[in-house]
Length: 466
Ligand code: BES
Ligand code: ZN
Image 1 (tube, protein in one colour):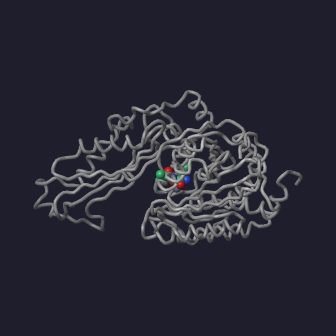
Image 2 (tube, protein in one colour):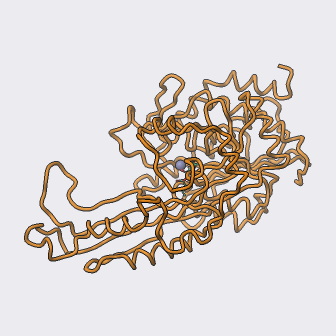
Image 3 (cartoon, helix red, strand yellow):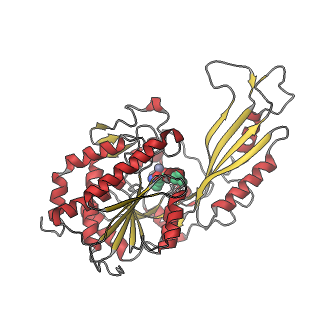
């Protein structure tokens, strides 16, 4: 190899087995942020990561804000005059349920061919750990880095990222001063086709609870005489969306929506998205959504409203004649620029109160939210990222949007005012948030090599201020 990064690239290839072993160790820690039962594991995970950062040669600190999960901060700032990169990731994971659908236990990572199967394999332990292994290898090989690096890895991304938001705003670019942020928590467009994202959706996550009689009732003795909370929650949920057009019926919901631009519609169309293949890959016969938009437009650039959970009444085997005393729904709305999550939460609550049937008590709670983001994907940082992805994966990345959310990204863009590279290493079939989540082992090692190349490439990028 005659290229700039050859020394370190050779080293990371030699170290592949250890890199994989370490990732397996990381994945064995069940750092589920949404469930308090895992609180100790979340903390243990932050300490494990801090230790690995120290071992790699970074100065490390655990940062806590308002009783939230610790953030792991690390830095190496010995490259005077060179640009500074802030690497972001999250060590928390989604709950593993439904457990019975996993082929192997979610926190006992299992290798199946090129797939590493475990909760968090791609989202986001596997992807974000590539950053640290690249930095570690370079420090081990050369004793120094060509750029300054800072790491901020949080433990609350999957629950809205409140602590990190408070921290980034309070820091206001002092300790976190940098020339660009690198995030690997998204997917490539397709196998062999890397992508840089310029848009993520925002989120507004609401919970509705409906209370009726003071206990479950015989459905014959009382049916017809009282409002059934199960029926009530169905009526409320049904009011949210027009089944004929796919439009959301919450008054004011679309008021602030920034329309998709013509050039974007053309770009999306030029990707040649195969709708039949997409439908087949997720086991549906037909794709359904808002009238007037293609699937990519619906998923990437139009706001949505979906039930994420729904409960009421008897769920066991066979029939039980009962009127449930309570019911509830978890509903998430994916937002686009310039919808404000707080305003959407207010409109949602107002609408639910208005349509709530008489005879039940309905409560609406705002669980969390985050803003959508659109990034100006031009300039030397994006060029640099495109170059290194091309060098490693053989193709220049396409610029796309995504339907997922990473709440802190809009805050980074707003507070730090630097480019944010959404340089994903995952694939669409990685089953994030689903049973049997996986990460292709070749993407893990390829990701480490990509990050090695990026560190070298960014050293020559103009506009470094630090
Ligand atoms: N890695 C995802 C975000 C993502 C998924 C981006 C797919 C692009 C494509 C991230 O970990 C995630 O799941 N975020 C949550 C955030 C929410 C809980 C605020 C999400 O999008 O549901
Ligand atoms: Zn996730």
